[in-house]
Length: 184
Ligand SMILES: [Zn+2]
Ligand SMILES: [Zn+2]
Image (cartoon, rainbow, N blue to C red; front, side, top):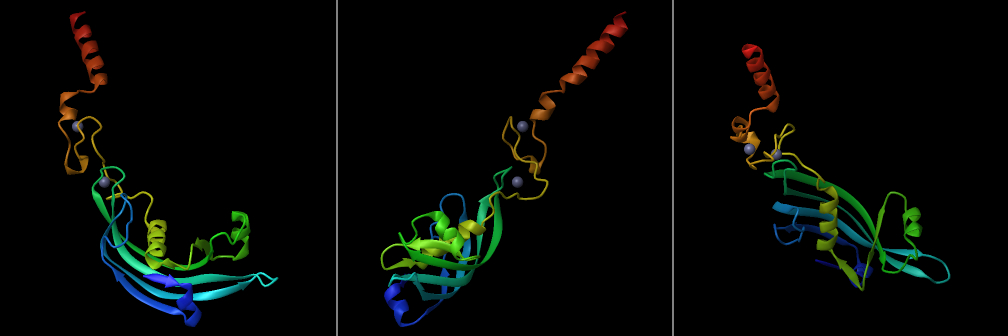
């Protein structure tokens, strides 16, 4: 869904959109597993910088809900993660700010980004918000046992054969000592 400056000049735009998994490219780390619901509005904000320099900013306020799957950081099993995010964003025309510092100090809590050409895609806005909200690292359970470093089996589903094959070397040392004491 394209949000165009020309349309916003006439009236603000209310949106209530549903995106099925696959409609928004989230990259390889996250898989969207339920429809993404996004509601909100977009409006044009004329930012007067003096000397007849007026910027056409796009302000987007809304919220999104969806669910993503991400691999458990220890055992790699998929972990389902519900996501909810409220956002308030301001998009300035590309090149409006000479430096990033300038942008960072100008609008308080609002996140500032830039759009190119005559508008921006709602899908691009949502992708960025999903990726900001998605967990950097997830575990399938708090005490996930992970994978065996030797054979790679998932230790949550029981001990792997490796442990029985390799006795702890400390017991070997005790055994040797016992044998030695006996022979003395
Ligand atoms: Zn796990
Ligand atoms: Zn093993």
